[in-house]
Image (cartoon, rainbow, N blue to C red; front, top):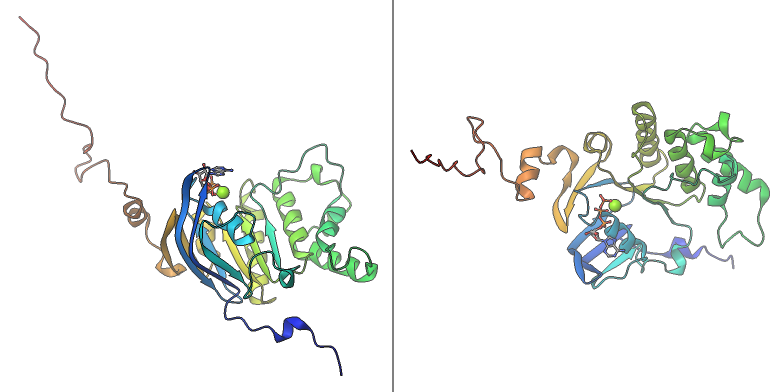
Length: 273
Ligand SMILES: Nc1ncnc2c1ncn2[C@@H]1O[C@H](COP(=O)(O)OP(=O)(O)OP(=O)(O)O)[C@@H](O)[C@H]1O
Ligand SMILES: [Mg+2]
């Protein structure tokens, strides 16, 4: 009888399922009551102010941070379970802030992504080289593949770390602020690349970004996080800025006439005659 691929026998409804998740860091409740389900092929964006728990949520999904309560399932099993080895790749916040004295070429960096516990000891060099070629081509860095990453522009570095993630051939790609520090042109090509990965390669993408305008152009679904999920829905339904302010409990400073509503009326002090 032929040995079957154990992954083919797995049954799961969602790539990611988060239920009632709360996480405490240094005694402070950072995220609470998170319920989230992501299906295969979705491109989900997460936005929220600084310190609202976006990175904490991603680290909890990856199993790097422990849940205080609730649970996370990726492809039906716990984060970091063995059967998910190689299925998830993560581009961390500021991943492209590589030290300037690091002597490593783009190709070498990307190759690191292709090495895993599955092929580390008996690598198939031809296969690894073709995966690396493909990842470098996808991010359009072929002409600089033998250049030190320290000599690349911010956008090129960002694409190099994304190529490293692609070289792992993971199905679920998690990116934390991949648009920071890259120019407009590089940003557009990166978003196009991610969109293509979703539509053409069937990857599932979860991406945190402060760049609301950019992420709203790309993600199919948006989440607005501020400790808990304040919005989760179709990108076209994403609230306007004034509604976001309301969600955050920020009141307008000026009334309709443009007068500052929050400054108390000045107290007139009569000078003693
Ligand atoms: N290692 C840590 N120990 C304790 N608290 C932390 C730690 N890292 C972050 N925090 C706190 O957790 C909260 C959420 O941080 P987190 O990094 O998840 O926010 P974020 O939404 O990703 O912010 P940013 O947009 O700045 O990246 C913040 O109040 C932060 O101070
Ligand atoms: Mg963060």
